[in-house]
Amino acid sequence: MLGRIVGVIAILAVFFAIVCGNLTALAPAVLDGASDAVTLTVSLTGMMCLWCGVLRVLKEAGAIRALTRMIKPLLRLFFPQAAKYPDIAEDVAANLAANLLGVGNAATPLALSAMKRLKAVSEEGERASPDMITLAVMNTASFSLVPSTVLTLLRSAGASDPFAVVLPIWI
Image (tube, rainbow, N blue to C red):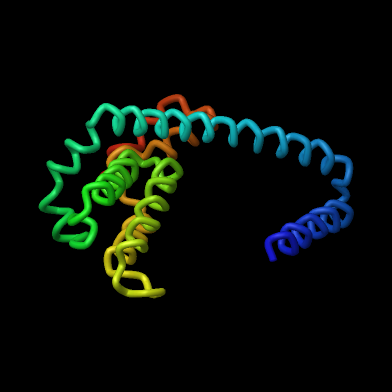
């Protein structure tokens, strides 16, 4: 389906370039757009790799375990099933930490791991357990204290002060 949508957009771009007399500007625009897309992808990948590495180091150092102990009351409230299993609770806590840092891409592997483990201990059969639904909703809601992805996008777009948006985002 996505391929069809992109195909229609490409055909429309060529059509309107011909109709508007801008066919000579189409090729440079396509090449510039492709170059900018690669640059943006590399920027976002670098940020995601950094935070995945930081989270991995924190997990290996035991900081995620300490974070899990600190937020155990919240985990019991929102994830009662996960709170019973230390490994699952750590994955959920790490996922929440990644989301708070605004790096949803780095949080995704943690969420997938937590979901697999929650499914393994679920008593719901093929249906999603309440903990799984809560985790999916919290990952979709995109709450964050530090909007790292937004900051990376602003920086790669050439913003002189990308951090100027942090306070308005918090508000």
